[in-house]
Length: 218
Image 1 (tube, rainbow, N blue to C red):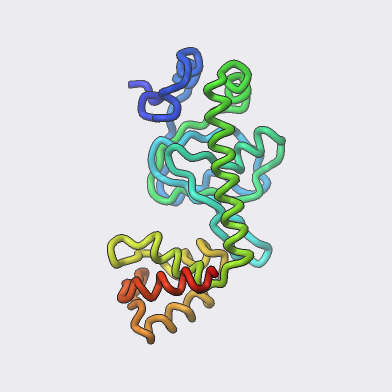
Image 2: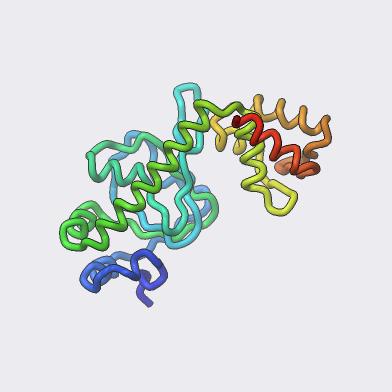
């Protein structure tokens, strides 16, 4: 079966574009696999079929921040910028769980940009959407206090009343340090807002977290 039939955005492309894409084989990536590192040359445009890839920026001191996540239907701005501008990767991408993807090589990518209006719209629409989310990240890290970012993360990522996430991963996601996250969670636990266990946070008072997120953001 053609993989292009499993990718909603690709299915709507013209027949010649789909035929060219069908010459490419999907790749299965194991959990934790590193797809690219800072300084590496961009190899192609990524189409996610399943799973998720986390793209992180790593600072000189070893701290990292989650720039964005690439799920099916989303683009990797690092790859797009590298292809269009010729720059190397400046971040690191890691598979968060098993993933399946297709890498469109540079020559095929540019051939499709030249020949397929639908593919051009797909690439630049996804690029614009990703840029908007990046601007939101910059705004949050620059102007929102840690309390608002952490409360928002817990509310967004929790499944039911439980968030399964390490403090280190939380710190990466909100652009802070693990020690800072630990202190905030300890404070909230004493106030009865959350309860902590190894690798998870239980929401005891979601309304208080909503208040922390919204009031701190004002």
